Amino acid sequence: MSLELLSKLETKIQAALETIELLKMELEEEKQKASTLSEHNQQLNAQNQQLQEELTSWNEKVTGLVGLLNSEI
Image (cartoon, rainbow, N blue to C red; front, side, top):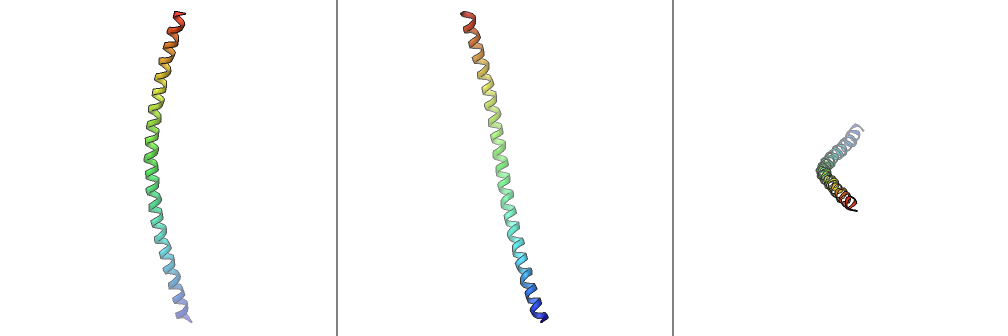
């Protein structure tokens, strides 16, 4: 009877070890995805900042041109 219990325990331990190994692999994949997403997020933030600066510049130019038109009218 005890050999049967030990065999069942060994099977359960082996299954647990396999599950742990799979979870470690999944965790590593998720870390890679998170790193990639973080890099992409940084790129998008930089692009957003650049576009905001361009928008501000264009707004200033348009405001200046409207001011010139108003002063000539």
